Image 1 (tube, protein in one colour):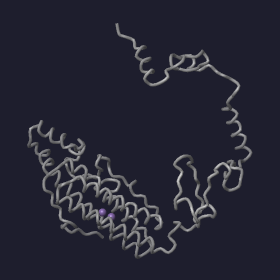
Image 2: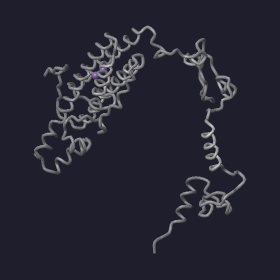
Image 3: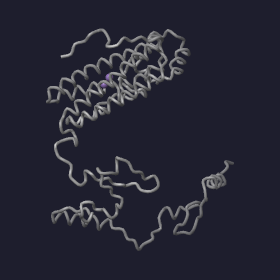
Image 4: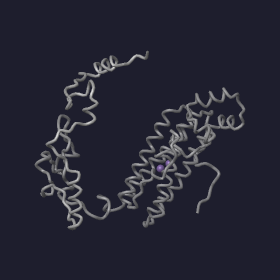
Length: 320
Ligand code: MN
Ligand code: MN
């Protein structure tokens, strides 16, 4: 069960209201790498977890993320306190209020629909979605995703710290950022506490494909490094020669029943193209300057964008 303690996990001291900053803080409230996404990610993973150690860790971290949600949401609420009250009470002149909301750079949605309260949206007003949680219920997959999620959250906090000069907010954000560092470390330990954690899942990779590096982008800029060269790698540079890599003919085939085969053939026959014809089409019939070569003759064209603009200008019909 959940219980609630009325004290925040970290004290929120906001120097003065700033609706623009509140909007930016929403990124960590209802955004893709925000605290709700983190809490829901770990909470649902914990419910499905069989391992007692991981289950305990996931519940601890999920619950802490909810506490972070409370801290960042409280920052948003404090930053919006002035504008929220003025909106609700109609205390300012219309023009003044209109200017305050407009000039502060907050979205109209935040002011008009959410009334300045902390809404579960990101900094662009996009509603939170469960699609931010990418759990696959396999610990060697989910722990890696959690490690990445924590490092993303860390970076977003870093950016938020860089855009505010409010010392109280900076301090609280510094705490939240650092907790994501600590969570990343726990997830890394939990991943490596699984003896065979790579490749993920149960099925082993198939040699020689597991040690093959395919140099699929070729030309100037081709580089070598430990990620594609050396003892660990069999590098494939001649792609055409290597295809199909399994030694087969590289064609796609399927076994079809007699009746399905007949239907597939009739479909192919109905949509068969005739390469010996050169039909006149609507593009030929309507061709004007710039159409290039058509069955009706050569309509020419511009040699560059500048000339094309000039030609277009010359074709402008002046109203009488
Ligand atoms: Mn957090
Ligand atoms: Mn975290």
